[in-house]
Length: 160
Ligand SMILES: Nc1ncnc2c1ncn2[C@@H]1O[C@H](COP(=O)(O)OP(=O)(O)OP(=O)(O)O)[C@@H](O)[C@H]1O
Image (cartoon, rainbow, N blue to C red; front, side, top):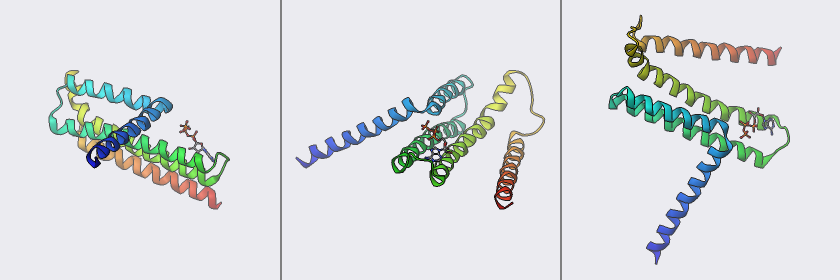
């Protein structure tokens, strides 16, 4: 029956997807760290009773990081399929894929700082000197400028 066939195919797809996720979790140290951090953050959100609108951002950033780490592993294995020898393009592909995970992780850190800094400090009876959004803007601007300067230096070294 076509219906039964489709159900079987769907369950097979889930099985393959879970196999992929299990592989990433078992083989990648970073994925284990992401899982541990996500668990801690969820417990912290529960303890601090984070409002739903902010909690949604926390959940989004958790799954965003998990997605990017999974994608990164897929890219790494694909590169390994093409070559296990040293190749500058293999290096570039893997380094850029690692950059994707770093961007996702930074997004998660920024989200965590915005959501958790004030509630955590208020538990300790401390007040921030400036609004958290202003401090976040300054921190992100500093990061962007630092990355830009680092890239310029790298490009300069290549030319020189
Ligand atoms: N075939 C290759 N050619 C050139 N450089 C490579 C190659 N494979 C890996 N590298 C370099 O080594 C770095 C680490 O690669 P590696 O595949 O070990 O990634 P990893 O994050 O340690 O993943 P895993 O431990 O899951 O294999 C890459 O970012 C890249 O700079």
